[in-house]
Structures are given as C-alpha cells and as structure tokens.
Amino acid sequence: MTDTFKDKGFATKAVRVGHRRTAESEQSEPIFPTSSFVFDSAEQAAARFSGDEPGNIYSRFTNPTVRTFEERLAALEGGESAVATSSGMSAILSTMMGLLESGDHIVSSMSIFGTTRVLFDKYLSKFGINTDYVKLSDLDDWKRAITPETKMLFLETPSNPLNEIADLEALSALAKEHDCLLVVDNCFCTPALQKPLDFGVDIVVHSATKYIDGQGRCIGGAVVGDAEKVGEEIYGFLRTAGPTMSPFNAWTFLKGLETLDLRMKAHSSSALDLAQWLEQQPAVSRVFYAGLPTHPQHELAKKQQSAFGGIIAFEIKGGQQDAWKMINALEWISITANLGDSKTTITHPATTTHGRLSPEAKALAGITDGMLRISVGLESVDDIKTDLTLGFSQL
Ligand SMILES: *Cc1c(COP(=O)(O)O)cnc(C)c1O
Picture 1: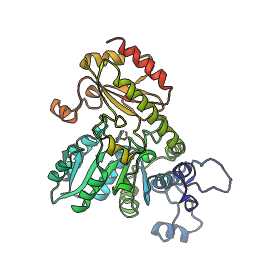
Picture 2: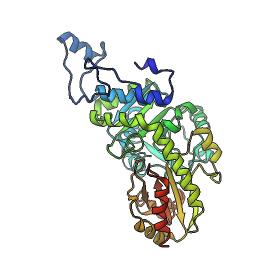
Picture 3: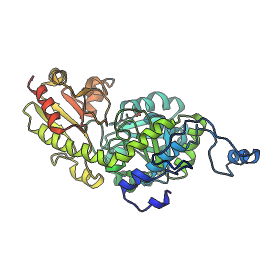
Picture 4: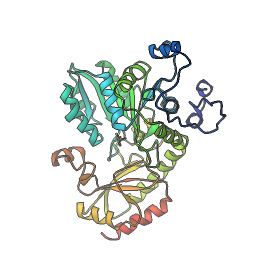
C-alpha cells in the first residue's frame, strides 16, 4: 500500500499512506483499541516474539492504528522510520534515551520549548548527559560549544516565539564534521512547510499535539529518521519503557494529517496578512515573522520553508502593562499558551511560557515584557483583526 504512493504528491500521501484495508472493507482507518493480539499457534507466538515473523504482539509497541500514523508521517517527512510517542516531550526523551549515554554532551539552541530545557538541565544531567546552549542563528557559537564529547546538536526552527531561523544545511555540515547527530523539533512548520531531512538533518521530533492534530484535542509526539537509529534504537527504548501513543490518539492524528497541507497553507496566509497589518499599528514597535521582508532571515526561511507558518510575535510599546491590557480587552481570541490550533490563541510569553526564565535568560532569548505571541487560527482573518483592534483601542 505504502509503495503505491511512493512517488505521489504530499497531499496524496497525507490522505492515503499506511492504511491496510481490513476484511470489513472500511473507507476510514479503523481504531484498534486492543492491548494484545492473538496468535494462531504456539509456533506463531514464538516466531513473533523472536522477531522471525513480523506482526502484532502487544500495543505497547505494535498497534495497527499507531503504525498507520507512523508510516504516514514517515512518508511525509521523507524518513525511513517513524516512532509515535505519548507526547512531544516523550518523543524528545525517547530520542535521548535511545541514542545517548552517560558522558555524552548536547549542544542545544537556547531558543527551545521551556520544558525541553528542563528535561535537559534537570533530568538528563542526572544521568551524566550535559547540555550547553547557543544562539540559534550564530554558527560560530555552535562551533565554539562543540567538544570531543558532543554527540548531538538540538534545535527548533523557526524558534518560539521570535521566529528565528536556523541554517539547516550549515548545521548539518557542522554535525557531520564532528560526528554528531543533528536533531530538529519540526513542530512549528510540520512537513507541510519544511522537511528538515532534505537539508541533511538526521532526526526530526514532533509534538503532534500542535499542528498535526490541529484542533487541540490530543497529546502525542513522534520521532522520524532512518531505520537504524529511529526504527531500532529509539523504537527499542519505546518498546521497553512504554511512552506509547494510544490507538485513539493515533487515529485523531491521522485525521489531522489528512488536512495538514490545507491547514498549514491557511494558517500561513492568514498569519502573513496579520503580520503585515500588525506592522502598521501605532502601538506596535516590532513584529517577528519570517514572512516579512524586514525579518533578518527572510531569505533563509524562503529557502527552507514553503511558507512561514502560523506563529507571530509582536512587541507592544507600552510594556507588560499594555500587553496585558491588550489581552484582557479581547472578545473571543483564546488566552492560552497552546498553539497550532484551528482557534486563534494569544499569550504573554514573559509571564507564561518563558516565565520561569531568569531576567538574564529572558533578555538573551529576546523575550521582552511587551511581547505577545499569537498562534493564528483558521477563523476569518478580518475577524481576528477586529478582535485585536478592540485590544489596541484600550492602549
Ligand atoms: C509543545 C511543544 C513540545 C512538547 O510537546 P507536548 O506534546 O506538549 O509534550 C515540544 N516542542 C515544541 C516546539 C512544542 O511547541
């Protein structure tokens, strides 16, 4: 089935790959809520367990609905293997546990999801895996941080919330030169807008919770890459430790993938429109969106991405007081730190997603007190502007 769609377009793969129709002739992918699977004989059970015969055993590591999601996402990212996980965080944890050992060193962008940073600093460090942080777009900073123990470079591009862009080709060359793996969290773009593996990246991780679901329903994650590192080593950790995606969530994410291409185009076109509009607002001092020609890495973003995504950060001149006033005046835009939803959301990073950072770390990450982040949803963009205008009128 998967081979049928090997040379088909992205949108076709997103709808079709991975479904093996059962004897019931269903059109939509079935959900298999079963913890274990039945064998025809003792011989077959033994062959399944020994790995001599492929097939389902137990849903901690083999479930047909989850496998359909994995095959479809792997096809969309252009990877040999994908492993689905219970959350984006467990995708990152499984990557580290599967591929690193005590004494290994990670160089990471400082502009990463806050919880990822806590995972590195508080938990991986307990097992002798230490992390140093660098500026995402500064190649020399990456070079300086690499030591003989460095086994992995880790980043998100575009970054949250400032939409800073990493040069994936340059970083992948650097990783190869130092024999380390380059891991990219592709949550903001999804494969609909950016395929890191095409630029030499080794492993892509996802929080499927965001755009892959796209409607704010389920928590999940995934790791995509080659058959050995992902298909065996990371899969081996998942099989043993069990941060497994549930069949129901896998089904929800499959449905999400079917509309991913359309949604990412719509999020991106509304966000570009809104970013241009925000630039004209007198109360706004700066807009951070890689689709704007004023963005310092606009050309690099154009090379790596087919569009610029749905996340915009902008700075209100009046600092935190006016930023909060603005949020509180909105009629219906949701005040929540989640992103990638069909519903537009707004958050004040300095006191929410980045609230645990020290003032120095905030300054380094470029998070100012007047900054707001919008995840542009699928509502009519004119209505989003009208709601924001209510906010601006209070300042
Ligand atoms: C949300 C998020 C994560 C964590 O994913 P969960 O599904 O919440 O565990 C990781 N990386 C990025 C960029 C995210 O936005």
